Length: 187
Length: 187
DNA sequence: TCATCAGGTAGACACTGTCTACGGACGCTG
DNA sequence: CAGCGTCCGTAGACAGTGTCTACCTGATGA
Image (cartoon, rainbow over all chains, first blue to last red; front, side, top):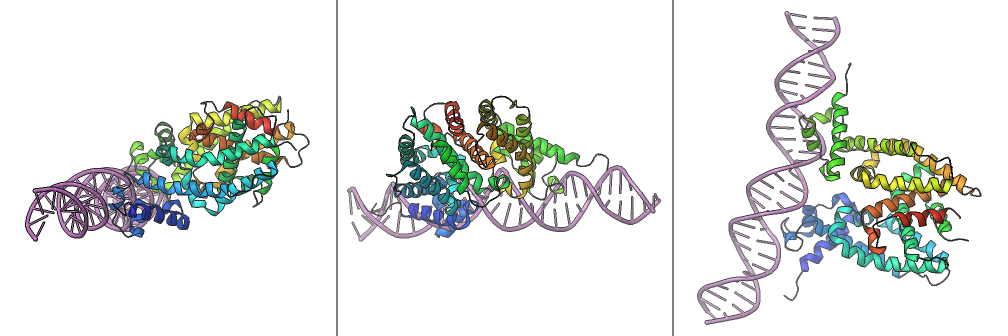
C-alpha cells in the first residue's frame, strides 16, 4: 500500500473545510461523503462510526490551536504572556467557531481523550509555566493553571453564546479577560 | 379553556424526567411524545419546533438552578458565600448533568435568550453582590462578576467532560474551585 | 340540531447513521 | 498467463429522526 489512507485524509480535510464554512450542524456523515465525492458507505472503511470521523476532524482543531500557542511569544513578562494567551484562546474560538464548538462536544471527547490530552498538554505546559512565573509563591501551579484554563474556556464559551453579553453589555470580551488575568496575577 | 395547555405542561414534564434519567441524547421529539402517551404530531400544537420544546425543558433547569441559588445563605462572609455558590454550581452540573448540558446547548439559546436572561439575572445579582463585598475597591463589579461566572462555568464544563482531570489528576474539583476563588478574592 | 374548530392522529417526505451484500480492480502465486 | 484473494468503494435496505399535511373527532356555542 503505497498511497494508503488517501481517502481518509481527504475525508478529514473535507470535514475541516465544512465545519469551518458551515458550522457543526452541517457535519453529517453523508454530507461529508458527498462533498468528498464518495458514497456514504465509504467513510466506514476508515472510521467505524460517525463520531470517530468527527473526532478526527476535531483533532485537526487541537493541532491548529497548539500551533497557534506554539507560535506565541511568552518569554517576557508573564502577565503579558497570560493576556496574550487569553486573547489567543478567545480569538481562536471566534475565528474558528465551528471548530471550537466541535472540539468540545463531550460526546466526541469520549473516544478521543488521548487526542485531546496530547493537544492540550503543550497548551497546559505553557500555562503552568506562565502561572509559575507570574505567581512565584504558588505551591501548586498546575491547580492554579487548571483553574485559569477553565476561566479562559468559560469566557470563550459563554461569550460565543452571547450569555455574558446579557449581563455585561459590550461586544468586547477584553475587559472580562483583563479582569480575569488581573485576578489571577497580583499586580 | 379551563384546563388549557395541559398536554404542554405534560410534555415539558416528560422531557424533564427523560433528560434527568437518560441524558440529552434521549430527548428526541418522538420519544418525548411516546413517553407522554401521545402521537408524534401532538407536540406541534404547542411547540412550533423540536428546539422550542427542548428550550422549554431547559427553562425548568434555569428555574431549578435559580431556586437553589435563592436558597443559598450569602449574607455572611463574602468569600464563604462565593465558595458556597461555586460549590452549588458544580453540584448542580454534577447532579443534574443532563439538564446542565441541555441548558447550555447553544442552538437552544437562540430562541431562549429571554428565558436564560431571566434565570441568570438572580444568579448574577448574587454574584455581583458577593464580588462587591469581597472586593470593596473594585470599580466595576459586574465585569469581575462576569469573569468569575465564566470561571465557575468553565470549571463545571471542563470537569464534567473530564478535560481537567487529564492535567490535574484528582477526582475532586474542590481545589480548583478554591484556587479560583482565592485568586478573585484577595486574602 | 347543526356548524365550527381546537386538539390530537396518522401517514408521507426527506434526511440521518449503521449494516450488509455486492463488484471490480489490484497484486500475488501456481 | 490463468486464477485467486483481498482491499476498497458502491448501492440498497433498515430503523429512526423532524417537519409538513390531510384527516378525524368530540366538545362548544348559536
